[in-house]
Amino acid sequence: MADTFKDRLRKALDVRGISAAELSRRSNISKPQISEYLKGRYEAKQTALHAIAVALDVSEAWLMGYDVPMERPAEVKSTDEQIAFALWGDDPTITAQDIEDVKRFAQFLKEKKK
Amino acid sequence: MTTPQLYDYAEQNNVEVYNFPLGGRKALSIPLEGGVCAVAMDTFRMTASDEKEALAHELGHCMTHTFYTPVTPMVTRARCEVRAIKWAIRHIIPEASFMYYLRQGRELWELADIFEVDPELIEKAANLYLYNHI
Image 1 (cartoon, helix red, strand yellow):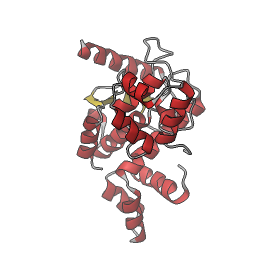
Image 2 (tube, rainbow over the protein chains, first blue to last red; image 1 turned 45 degrees about the vertical axis):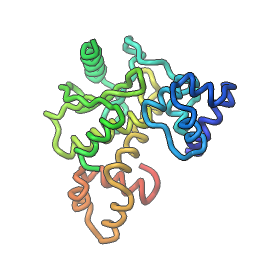
Image 3 (cartoon, rainbow over the protein chains, first blue to last red; image 1 turned 60 degrees about the horizontal axis):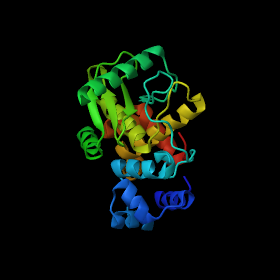
Image 4 (cartoon, rainbow over the protein chains, first blue to last red; image 1 turned 60 degrees about the vertical axis):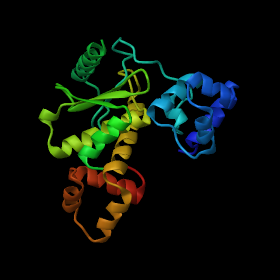
C-alpha cells in the first residue's frame, strides 16, 4: 500500500476538480476536519470515510490506499449476482448455501430497519 | 484485542453485529448504505476462539471495505480474504506481543493459548510478521 489516505484524498480532490470547502459541503464534514485529513493528522473513520467516498465518487478501499480501482463499486443490489458480502475463512469459494445465508441475513436487516 | 474489546470496537465504528443462524459459513458480513456494515455470527456453532477470529475477520472486511459478489473473480476474492486476515491478525495478535512471546521461546500451542486463537492463525501471524506474507 504505497499511498496513504491523505495522498488519495488529495488525489481525488485534484481528479474531481473540487476544493476542500466543496468537499466539506458535499460530505457534511467540517472544513477543519477535512483539513486535518489532508494534513495527515487523522484518518477518517467508517462513516466519514463513506461520506467522503460518496462525495468524491471514489471507492472507500481506494481512498484508504489499497491497490484497487478508483471507481466506486455498485451499491448493494438485490439480485444474486450483485449482492456484496464477505465470508469468514480464507477459502474464497462461494456455495449456494452461502448465497442463501447472505440473502436471509440481508432480508433480516431490511425488516429490522422498517 | 479480546473478544469483548472487538465487540466494543464494532460498536464504536458503527458495525452492527448480530447473532444469526447460518447454514454454511459460521460468519459473514455485508456492506450497508451509509458507510456501515453488518456482521452475522452463528455463535451457537462457534467455539470461543472461533468467535474471536470470526469477529476480527469480518471486522477486517468491514474496516478495509473488502467485499465481493458471486461474480467477482476468484483471485480478487482471495485478495479480499488476505486483507481481512491481515487486519484480524494485527488486531488480535499484535506484532509487539507476538514477537515478545516468540523471543521467550514459547511454543505454537502456548501462543495459541495466550492469544486465545487456533494454532492455525498463529502460523499465519508468524508468516505475516516474520516473512511479510500469509
